[in-house]
Image (cartoon, rainbow, N blue to C red):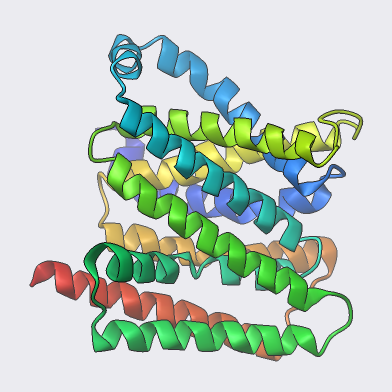
Amino acid sequence: MNTLERHPMILIVIGIMGISLSSIFVKYAQSPSVVTAAYRLLWTIILMTPAVICSKKYRRELLETSPKLVLLCILSGIFLALHFTLWFESLNHTSVASSTTIVCTEVIWVALGWRLFLKGRLSGKACGAIAVTLAGSMLIAFSDSSGQGNHLYGDFLALLAAIAVAVYTLIGRIARATASTTVYTYLVYGACAVTLVIMTLAQGLSLTGYGSSGIVVGFLLAVFSTILGHSIFSWCLKFLSPAFVSASKLCEPAVAAVFAAFLFHEIPKPLQILGGLVIIAGVIAYSRVEQGQEKE
């Protein structure tokens, strides 16, 4: 057992830093949101391809992929593309703290979709946790509506981004029943990249001409946020409980807000901080309800 396997918390910290830097990197991009998102996914595919193609196991699985799985991956990729575009655009209108906190409500929208459309039932405690989370979102919206700029619009885009990634997650739960993590993510990221390129061209935008910042930001997002972020959390599930790994991701808004305070002088208002704490409390409460139901 190597050092990282003996001390998985080291990787948890790296993962938190990785995902927390996402919003910071996006702030530095000079390209349109959809173009920045396209750069991120194209870089991700470029970095993943050698590992997938050089593996006999993954090559065989790709060749044996069923049409149904391909369709699910395409749908999942479309919603992931919508998530990235909406979230990146939200950062142009609202603060890093507000945007990242609202996007963290993803788990609540997954819960609603999973229970209402796939299982059909929510317990009273789960409904209470969801209500708490929505109340936190309203506090942030109220705080942002009283300020200058178009912060409320940015908050709304962040909310749509959370719903889009929730749909992506729900589709993934179905598709993952017959596919490995690597092949599934490779197909989804590929579909997402193609969707983002089509969205870019459909808006009459170019993929080039924005200087090197967009390309560099896309690369940094692919490396730090995707590979050293979400992929690390998936690996940590081998050594730590899913509840702990999921809860650790809730550190993202706080860490991202600290980065934003130092780099962009974005100081959260008291009501924003309160709303963020209420949202995180609601998400944690719902996670505990889910844990209790799984044990029953």
